[in-house]
Image (cartoon, rainbow, N blue to C red; front, side):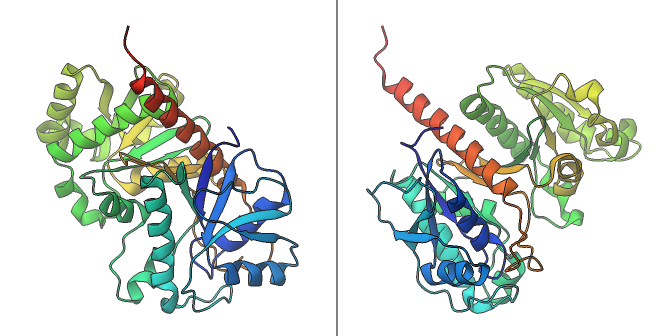
Length: 339
């Protein structure tokens, strides 16, 4: 990491632990510039409640972000109606989305090198009459890309998803050759771009129990997944599967793989979160910007208690900075003259 990098950090749901996780960063020096995109009044009130002495320094694009202990750069966003921890208020929903939009547009404009997001509460945003299914889909629409990929990662396991926030009854219809092709290509390309893998080895889970049992437990593997993977292998991708999800997550398979591609949210993420909850990072692949996030929710019951663990946020910042550096280096390499 390097202090010449700047990451925008959105503080998430005001009633949750996001604001205090951001404040905890000021307890020590940072190896990368962090700008918290949030209500300065919210951060000041949470610091007062927790007895934290943090100097909140206003920031604007073009300025250098604070990295020294005791100080935290803040890009103030107006509109936060309620500052109380633990109490959801739909009136805050527009403000929450404004923080995301400001951070993302700053990334697109080159004003910051990437964004890290604290958790939001999907339910309260929808209660405010705003259709919202998650950071991933929101940033996909804002950046104007056809497809993005959600991937969670620990030190030893990466799990990407073909489908994300869908009801289970809709998943099979959503696993189409087009979606599977797009997701797999994005995963393969971004593992190269951001994680230094020249030839990523990807394990692909089946959709049905026992990967369909030769068609006896569903035909999606035979009709959609296997033919699509064969076409992608012909392009040079290193893909193994479709494999039964109940045995895929074992050393026999994982020891020789760089990532797992699961068909739906709760097929792959419970395994990863069991292995590394609180130390994992959520990454959105396929965007024209770098975006990472924590692996947990708003934890309303912990908000304002001072007991929130910032471990996942530190991981998200570390991974986000490394990805931003890789993206910057790749951009420089593309501009170098060819001999």
